[in-house]
Amino acid sequence: MAAELFFGAPAAPSSLVWQDREIRFDSNTTDIKTREGEQVIAVLDSVEDTKGNNGDLGEMHVTNLRVMWVSKKNKRTNISIGHNCITSVNVRAASSRLKGQTQSLYVLTKYHNQRFEFIFTAVSETSDSLFACVQGVFRAYDNSRLYRDLKLRGALIVERELKLLPLEQTYSRVNGVWNLSAEQGNLGTFFISNVRVVWYANLAENFNVSIPYLQIRSIKVRDSKFGQALVIETTPASGGYILGFKVDPKETLDYVFKEISSLWQVYTVNPIFGVEYRADANQGLNGSALLQSEQDVEIVEPPDRGDALAQYYADATKGVDRDPMYCAELGLAIEQLKEGLTIEQLWSVL
Image (cartoon, rainbow, N blue to C red):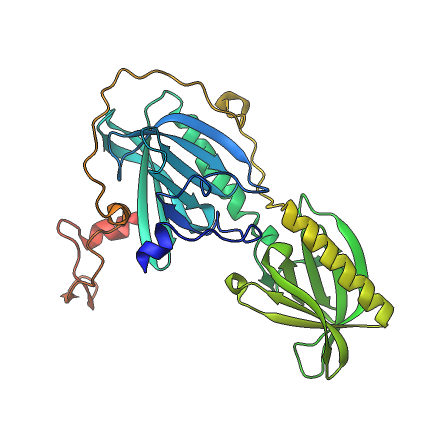
């Protein structure tokens, strides 16, 4: 199962965005190419994958959807880390074959209930600017989730007006739209924009839903016990909701269906992910490759990768839970700690 998830996964349909939501290792060249709407923000030459390929130089690509590392010796040795999988980005000390003791980028991730740790070391002199870029892009991604994630009962409406996102444009406002999620229905208003469809209840602005085009699986007009209704089905990743809306008269229903369908198709061709990052002028990151510097180092031939996935586990021994033990300090039964690790050290992380 793990091999199917991380290695040689079948290519997703062009309309399905996986780049920001998955971690993939040793992908084919198609998967490490940018897709529609994906923008390369920075490229840094001479970056070492210190944890999995210590001593192996590669290029790091930071896009609005993911962080990629590609080996210089073999492009099939690569890593793609979706921003949605990242839990934290830090700079800490690490041991590199190419630089010895140095400051490295630690990227902690979680994917399919498994935790992975990646350590990258920039051999060039521009490491600080790269690390600032990775951290900045991750924050920009995290702060722009309304472009990509379905949101229920959010702070979307202020005084009956939609709070627009920075890259958002509203095309239509449709009054008198019934949400059919309840037996009696709720009367509300539609906002149709270039990135999403938003509905809110007229009597309670906080009763609302924001549906990004990115999460729409299908749009149809179906018969219901309330008559013909607009039905929007969302992707499994967003919960697989089936949302019904009653729009009268029929002419308005037809117009709303055609407009949402048209905007959804336009978005699919050229999606707007909403991740805006501008590097400081002194960082020198302009979306193109940074200056490459020849390094006077000897490339150490790495050993056989073996189980490449296991090298990145945040805790390589966690394939099986350790036996429980009583902790007098906490007064609780806990899982046995790794050798050399103490409760005090765990609390210091917090």
